[in-house]
Image (cartoon, rainbow, N blue to C red):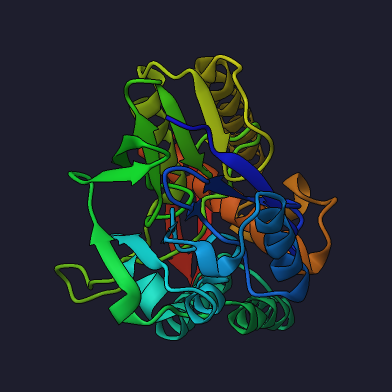
Length: 326
């Protein structure tokens, strides 16, 4: 049973680098792959070369979830290797047809930020930045893909890893747990910072024939509980180095931070700030305008939690959400 090697790949995003985890034995397997940018390709090629490998040596590429920094280089690797791409049911369409899925997300995001109270000129600024992501994300040919689900066991590093669906940060997110060594490849689930619950929609329409938003932050809080009772000896996260800190401390720190920010959000609603964007402008005033979409996603999540707790309620006026305490 071998330990995965961290390949640290640069991203163009504020979070910094993303990890690809490489198993060398008994066959080269890569978990996640970065986005399709020249500096990311250079770093990946150099990281493989340091282990005596090239992209052509890869036998499997396993994708944890459908975000560009974890899956965007898939098309490049498909062209430069004969590797199989192992992709979950939840993630399949994101890897196979990112153009369609990304177009749906951008359109949906434009609608949500309008409802959140974002001014029209800023809506366009936010959405145009999202559209540009399509240029660094390539799909993988379906005939190169192998499907897995939560009942599957993935062979990596001479061990069999369980698959855990962990929605919240992304509805498509899966993590991998090896029950003998008690190691976890956590994707963006267990990080030293709370991951942003990306605003996204369900693929299918609801019973009323409407597009429905996934409640990302409440789902993330539920997913944290899946991992709390696991025995974990080491965590290989999507961002940052391997850590052996007690994972429950990491989870408690995440939850505590989220609850504190949620209460700050509640106080702003109580004081009369009624729109999600108005709250964002206060809580994330240090963010540049173009980057406030990240803060807005967090605020929408805090408001979702407060509505679940019955502390606030939402009404819509002229297409914009307004919140007040109950």
